[in-house]
Image (cartoon, rainbow, N blue to C red; front, top):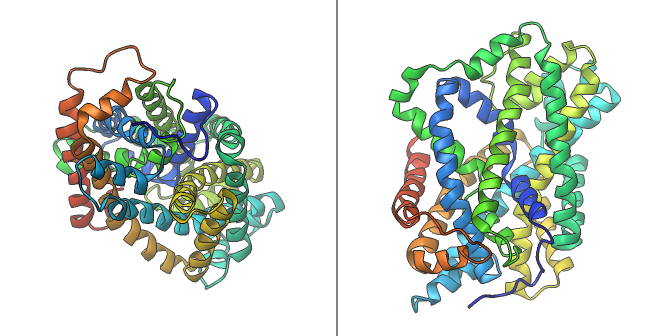
Length: 441
């Protein structure tokens, strides 16, 4: 039985795909992907990464999109629906786990995106260029309540977008922000190409070190990077799928999303890593790459102030579009479970995100919070989603939904890939997240 979403649908396929890409493209694409590519064999790393992207896009994303479109609601309602098809209760409780993961990430993410906004403003005014990067970063992250205005502005912007609804808010803003993200990063990547010493950065990214393919950790990290890069976490993509028209080909949209997300990661790599090498800095500096290493690059680069502003604005767009997806999942649940109006639900979701975030604005606290959410809660939500779609609801039911709006039959291998390979790898992501220090995503 097909359900209709309370919030309407996306009005176009490109609007849906750009929204999905906006949800998927985030900080991991911008700093983690380039760093991991170089760390685990350069171009050799791309082989397992692209294999996992293809698999997770084909059966993971398509499954979550179809699941949401079938039920017309988010994870709580979708999991409840699947369990009821088996005559069992408890689906709503299980669906709350990935939903809490979305809220947890949104709380920490809004702080980070607030830092990005502050850096963009600092580039615009020149203070980012005239202050030691460590000092600038400490001013906005080292003490409690040190970034309240920027943090609050990010949440307010996201809430404002969501209040306008699916087609009037989410779709419209992604049609502007995601193309702008690609254009701005392309401009930066072209500029970086002409920096003296940038060649070493391209070697770091592109020269294959084939021996890394014999290292199991390379495959594990590629799997984690692909899994979390596509946001197949049992929550956000389900809610966007619930807004997808029955006329659209879910599998094709999933593949387009995977391709564009990978293009974003590669573009970020070509913009970030060669510039870091050009000035002899450390490409493995992790999250601080954004806030300490790159500002130092911009301080030394001709027209650095302009390129710093363009860079942080493009990262801001990626952050806002991702945050919109997380808060949409939470606000939709508030609408359907608490019977709130859309506007009230969105404001409540935003207020809760900001209120908790204010307690952990300090970098150390925020880091611990994000570790707990991303290493433990999100992977569990992901495996719950995979099992719920392909084992509880069943491959036969989800394939019927996948064929809505599609003429070409699915591959004969779809059943096996989805039910056994994908679900097994989702379980492996959970195990690796618990076992490997710092997680894999």
